[in-house]
Length: 362
Image (cartoon, rainbow, N blue to C red; front, side):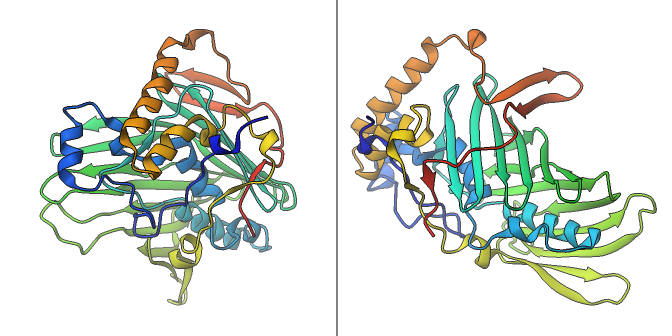
């Protein structure tokens, strides 16, 4: 039987990109000195990147997934998918980073009828796969995440390669979309934000959306901070049906080009505020590969601000990872392919994700 202390779960990040718990060392000097005494755990917050990906899908203040099927209009369903896509954009914490998932690491959580499973299918390069299903709504989500950072001196821009799909099986519709880029700035004003263009399309209906994620300028202007702007149109005519405007951390409105009327399609406070920490419902069913178990000692050390213990535990995990032979490892939950033309593709082995032993309390 697994010891309960080995499963450590922490609260999702708040809307402003911070946490209700301060994971940082007591002062900045200690953080700087840690660079010279090799204490990298000081620069982590107690969560794996795999958990961060999962939280953007299963941690919501209201049930956006169940709303996807409600409308009989394909255009209204498309706007609901646009709102859902925006909801997966989550605030980040500057100066601290999640753990890099180890090969074969998993994260399995249920929120009501939505069951979400992630697996780290490659370590070099890092590739994460996500599969989520809601049997009641007959909705399926498939992601393949392959971050590729590019260094530009004063900033780092990370492109998140890989296909994202959302399938509404009741309507036989598949929506494909990409992820915005992650921008980390060091000068003149340090910060982290999402930027770039996101395209959402549905082949079955011919509807498409283009959304541009903006941020404040390098000179410090905050006019475009977390702003998004875009449009929804039909691919056959390219005529704009709706204009999209707002801020992904506040509200996003949709303006009907025909009549000029606007309405709110996304409110971040409703979706990202009041998020609950997952709990362990069935300890014996938690896999050894579960993120909250793999990194439990490191997370506990960070929560207790025991940096020596956290660093020792992290080194042990990383050493074990280096000793593993990636070429002989086969993912347990996904079939993975990679080509020069299409990049990485991760297909789930099973059609449905089973209920998880870790759940979001209701």
